[in-house]
Image (cartoon, rainbow, N blue to C red; front, side, top):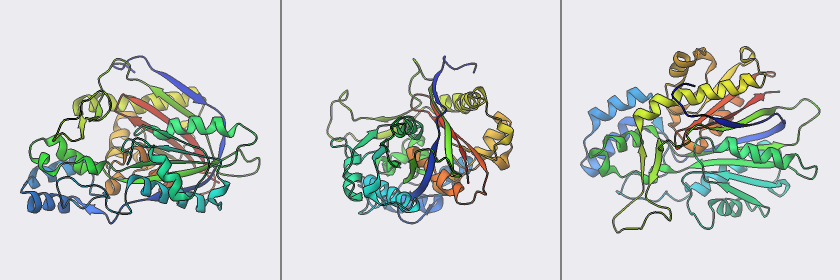
Length: 360
């Protein structure tokens, strides 16, 4: 991977049964034109022409957001907070698995936009599920799913471990300041590219019979000594709180464009090194950065566009929830024996991860 720093990755050949998946989205889909209209009518920010051009380039037509864009600064609407979305997705996955919450051994949550830092967002998720077992929360965005799998496979290697729930969730729309969309084109991109939601998966120990399963989990880091490509400004103990300051997502778009394809290439290289035959893969699920992923990866990596699954045109980039949301949707339409390769990529500090899945 020329142009990118030395990479190291974790690879795990162990297998886990996929018992169920679930998803949760806030409210109704919001079209690009509706967002631009709200900015104009409610905040006097007329960026309709620029916004339409940006949305066309991104290929995102609709997204789901947990706020109503009535006020400049808003918390999520009741029922659509980060923890509530995560709990809904997890509950759906548990039901899909034919299980009850009391049968879950461990809950692993991952998000970059928690409702609370302390106690962890996952504690609220557990309470909403009426789950009384152990849990852990990873503060990670688009590749949180891969690290969650690394730890889940370790748990499932214990003979006494029952089903493990993984849930990724994001409510990043609450960090969007409508007024700033007229001052900084990057903030307008945030509004048109990002979406809120949650996705979940229930894993079990390998089934010796015929059961859907994942294997070949990997996670790698290619961002050593590089500046973040995506970050949340403000917050954290390194920053002194100042009156009037608010959190805001910041992107280094040029660097992300230059390095993004290399992260997917690193994932494919890892899968090949593990001995997988990519010609036998029916579908690839890349991180849902935008609605043009099939076109972009087909051009950059030589993968056939019809084998690349995407839903970002309808959901936007949902960060930590993206892979699980796409996996849940694709899984519902797979035929027995179908093979899927998941390729996650995260621009915060240039991480990559994924897994292989066989449907039964």
